[in-house]
Amino acid sequence: MHKYIKSSYLFGLTGGLLCLLAFWVLFLIDLEPIDFTLFFACMITPVFVFIGIKNFRDNFGDGELLFAQGMTVGFVIYALLALVAAAGIALFLQLDQDIFLNYRAEKIEWLQGKEAYITENINKEAFEKTLEKNEEMSISDIALDVFLKIFMLELFFTIIISIILKRTKK
Image 1 (cartoon, rainbow, N blue to C red):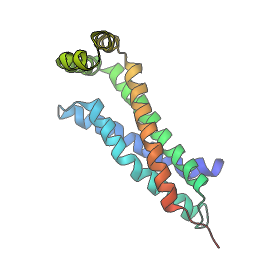
Image 2 (cartoon, rainbow, N blue to C red):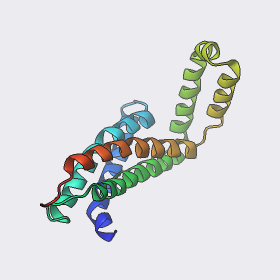
Image 3 (cartoon, one colour):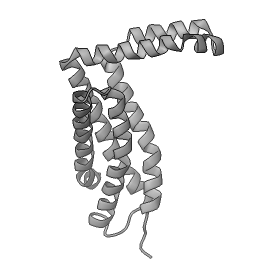
Image 4 (cartoon, rainbow, N blue to C red):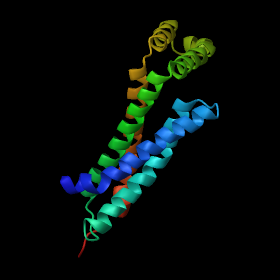
């Protein structure tokens, strides 16, 4: 297990730090930093997973890669990237509560704009429950949401990348 972590942790850390850099750049140019950072993370993570798995295959696997090895290396990379991004965003939101309060207000405003659609297609109780959950949203809820979205989406990409890069010696 040590060789999997050793070969991949830098890719996860670097990707996570790039996500945090994107968060601040987005904040500074007055774009909504949380959702755009999540989008950015989901776009760069497959690149880091691909490069990390290829690095493992070429430098630690003697040109050979089993599917399970690719999945393990990919898991370390995207889990670490998701953890760094989510923890960093939570820290930034703690340091600047206005970002969090604006994000929550935007989500509530968007939801209120969809009230007629939701009550018509689902029911009034579902809308009220969702609105109540959004009003009770905390920074840890946002961090968990960011972590889980990156984590779950990148599992799919890691499977594909592991299949593409799989190579066994004959």
